[in-house]
Image (cartoon, rainbow, N blue to C red; front, side, top):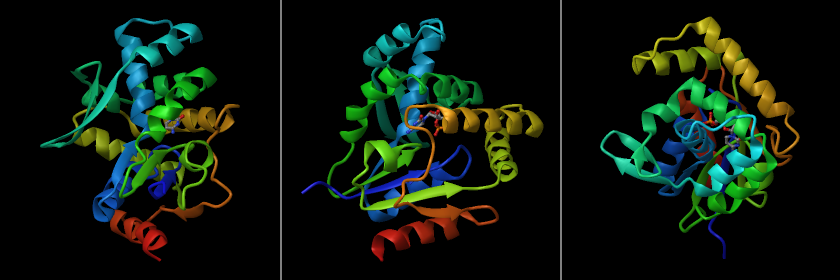
Length: 220
Ligand code: C5P
């Protein structure tokens, strides 16, 4: 009997990360941040100074890069090839690089089994773009989170400002729209809700409200 899965997909800044982590914590389930895997490949590629327009090199890099998640005092740390890359992983430049790399079919294929390996008892909350459509199509519980682009940009802006990263709201909005367009328009695993996903528009909703709605889907 395969462990139950709750998939949480949606565009960047819709609140997936926070909501997924809280949902996993309260259910006592494992958590997969699939975006971190694509970001990790992006970071490894930039460390190795790879040409982003060379898909073969990026595919090799995907196979060669090790990614580990460790629960630290300040939350989840992401270790890429034995280096703590958590802070670099969060940069919007890394997100953009990840999005370019994520459009390569062989990269997605190479990460498929690695993602499925996170499915373990008592259950898994999987956060990403294609969790409900491609990676865990048989998941019992599927959510698609959205929010207006303006609100998503504002949330990112606050997050980054708290971390001392200097960005403008305008620039961020433009980057978010460009990344969403690329994620939605690519031919492999484009960002879209699974047919059986519950859509939740989080515009104007607080984190707790969203978590409550998501947990209600699992606990009935
Ligand atoms: O969710 P996050 O912003 O960390 O993801 C970074 C990028 O990785 C996304 O913009 C998307 O292009 C890619 N991604 C993906 N499939 C996933 C998770 C992330 O294509 N399941």
